[in-house]
Image (tube, rainbow, N blue to C red; front, side, top):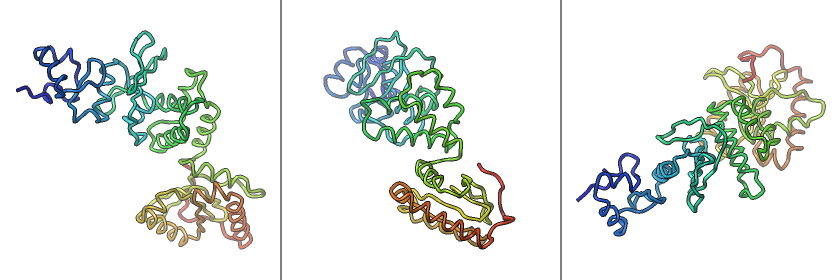
Length: 316
């Protein structure tokens, strides 16, 4: 009795041609007909209990096509997105004749690919994967909401310093017909200015709409007793800060308590912190702006400001 798992090797998938070099080809056909092996792609098999395993399927896809994981599949293997989409994206050379199928989307490209390895899988690098995904997400027939997925992937990758704005911009000349190019350039400008989330971006736009107030400093550094913090937006001249609360603030009690302790430490130094949710800045931006403006002018009139103890004196 053959140990099929051992025959398949560490990737837990193999070509029938490779298996036929280890055992009688008739045995391979018998295992397929009896269901002991299942076919993932023409000539590529695995155990039935592993057929839905994303990593196994990804190994089979790259082995079958001879290509690289790309687009959303590459972002998944790089852990820039948390969703492992069922249909795998693979980029191959233009001359290759592999066809798109139900479980495999094949992209042919003239562009040279820088091959990187992530979790044992060959993939396009993060910068290219992000740009390719952005292009997909802004096509006319893109799924609803896919543009938000692409945007959040860019924000996450830059926030976690997995990629830089400069590297993303360097990809653009090779894609002259990039769908959504203007929107991507606008997003990169926001990131360069300090934005780390979509909430910060729409919040900043709301704050910039306030007449008579100077522009806020983004990711403004203040040194607290427990270490440095960076404020989403700040007017250090009046010691006023705005923080934009994402889902974690409302759904994670530990995150909420941590942020409230930080607010208390800032208050001890003389700062006032205003917090706004996604609903606040997206649905009631004028109300948020009016509240910020009122607090700013009140503190300005009261003479708050001057030398700031604990100020890191630098934007990030």
